Length: 468
Image (cartoon, rainbow, N blue to C red):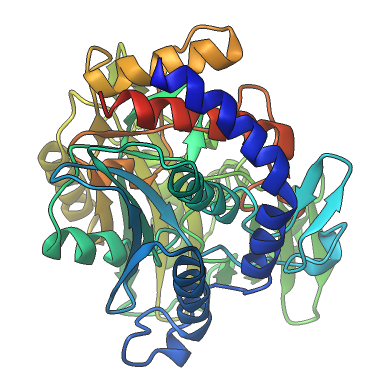
């Protein structure tokens, strides 16, 4: 069978070219392709570094004799094969910032190999899998694999931010017959929850300075993809000292003469997993809800948080809880709270499975905001993705995964967002195997090379089987 023959040759090929693959990955990791609109120019809508990464991939395609198209700096596609029908592999070249480089064991933008692991920003999310997919095209070309369907690697530049890249791409290009995104987990992620990034805010009409306790300022990082893991409060007034010291068991309390500064820290976690860690918002509300003599502006914020978000990560308090047998339950995470003398703003991430519509979500949040006297702002909505386990694509994936790993390929759903949701017939498929730790979006992001080769072998089997 063609699939078995070329799968064996693929392993031999990868063993021969692994050093070359790692060299290409190293050069791509060295480009800190973080979105930077201050360097935005024509044909570089996401900034200079992402443009540099695209240019590197264009040179790779030209070097290997592969067809490449640049879509105005929003996306690239690199392809091989013939036929009117296409199979697409969706990747992204942008990365999240490295953060505090002191927390890294190795320089984040210098790929480092230690034993069978490589470290660096983007090695798993998503530059390592991207280079692997390009080497699959190179493999098919060099081994003259007969393809009656073109294989196209589509590469976006804004997956970590706005998704303008794939929106632009599919506004000007047709959907593939099948597609998958190697930007998730094995076995098969056939469902991704809908995602709504939104905020509630209020502008103050007056400021109270004679209350016993006044919250002058609240500061937190506005990162909508993470839990609220660091929160700073400034407390003033006659009871500020007493209130501040109620935080002392779990926060740093600093006497600043004119006010007290409270710094609350909790472990970092992705906003799609609010159940895994404590949230600074909960700790803040659990103290402040009992404070008497709190200024009215601050009291309105505490009441809003307590009524609709605190100690609830599934959306019960919003009136939006829903549980689907296949895709699981809703999640809600406050990612940031900020307040000054002019007003306050809280950012939150709401994710939901099939069975709950975005129209219902929007309607409920708008009604709650009007009742609370705050402004509701929608920042971004990503529709949910779901593909039946009975589809031809998933059947081919299941067989390939079982053949290579010897284990069943179960379908499951996630709250994560991959480019799979931009496809009409697609899923997220690897490259991370069960129980593997990759530290994506964290210091010391890592990729297991044995797992990468195993993933490539699975992908080769799938791509060949879909030709038949």
